[in-house]
Image 1: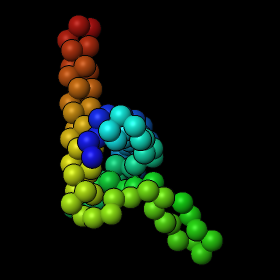
Image 2 (image 1 turned 180 degrees about the vertical axis):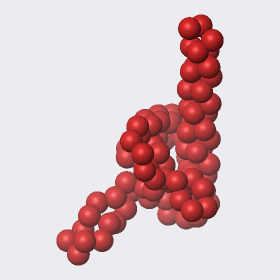
Image 3 (image 1 turned 180 degrees about the horizontal axis):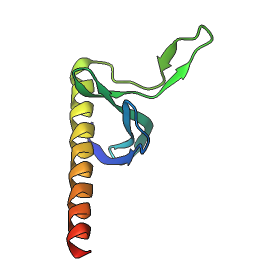
Image 4 (image 1 turned 120 degrees about the horizontal axis):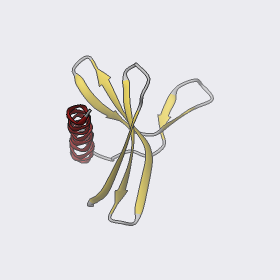
Length: 98
């Protein structure tokens, strides 16, 4: 499995959810609505979920093992940090031009 594309959409309002991400796997399969969350121990991802009849949230799509989850999380969080750095650099550049 290769993650061939990661698209990050930052969340502008304050709160624990920092971004919503879509990943493409092997240029053939897309998973939308993966959330980047700020937790007590730092950033982590939450897979897409749906509220069940009993009120609990259940993942719609998720990795089968912890190694795959860690790999996906590392790639997503790396892209999220890259997006933040790019935006900061753009803001700095635009600020110098003004």
